[in-house]
Length: 143
Length: 143
DNA sequence: CTAAAGTAGTTGGTAACACGAACTAATTCA
DNA sequence: TGAATTAGTTCGTGTTACCAACTACTTTAG
Image 1 (spheres, rainbow over the protein chains, first blue to last red):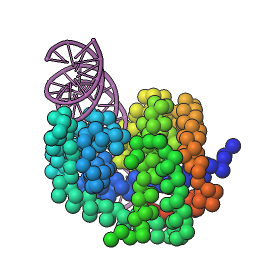
Image 2 (cartoon, chains in turn cyan, blue, orange, green):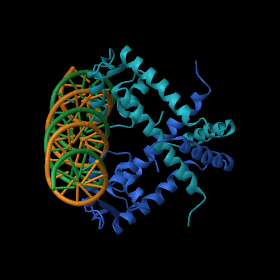
Image 3 (tube, each protein chain N blue to C red):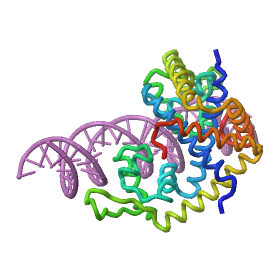
């Protein structure tokens, strides 16, 4: 029997696919994949080690390495050896990467804004509130 | 300057990553990728042609072909030539596929249900309502 | 103070996934 | 009927992700 939760679950799933689809489309227009876009998004306000980065993205260290490899090859990201521990590598965003992610983020916000234009202010607030609760309930890899 | 929309956009993005992450994790536990899970989800209540399927998933026809290939090899899905047009192929879910997607969907709903346990009933309704509006505003590939 | 254990990151192998281009087969249209 | 269209597959390429094995450091134990 369908529980009253089914509507909510369904809504969340469709919404997530829509957002991800929008993200993928937009990233594509800027020559980025979703993974690359996410990487740049994380590095916008952090300069983590490979390890931290991997944990943040929920990726295996080898995956992280490859992701950074490709981004570095495009000049979007930079590896710097740590001064204090010669095993660790700090990852930072380059000016080019920052500019790319900044403009892309603006366009993205704009596009999502269009999609949410018809949502009432009170529903908007409810959505933000609900999201906070849901994220608080998640033990996962999200920062 | 941060617009009042930024909270909403941020909420949507984080939410979508959480949902997708949950989906990926759960699919993995059932030996499925997100793409495979989505394929089975679509086929749960449809028997589309390759073409329709691709449009539904927002995939190129070659991607659709490969996706169905792999699912078919695992016995989750079936290709049947159309009787009326010898070019077209109907795709359907097998009993095994149906069982898999059914149990996985139940676990998924349960898990998301836990995450949304703290959300009030009125916010829940608001979220569903907001999602409808947003999906209505989207011209994209979602059915 | 050195030997063993642990940690950080890379490399190599494998597989899924997605795309575009080129192709075959069937159908529609002009 | 011959030309354009449509459905689907195949092939080649690139990204992404994993695991296992490896190197190079650092920490910990004895």
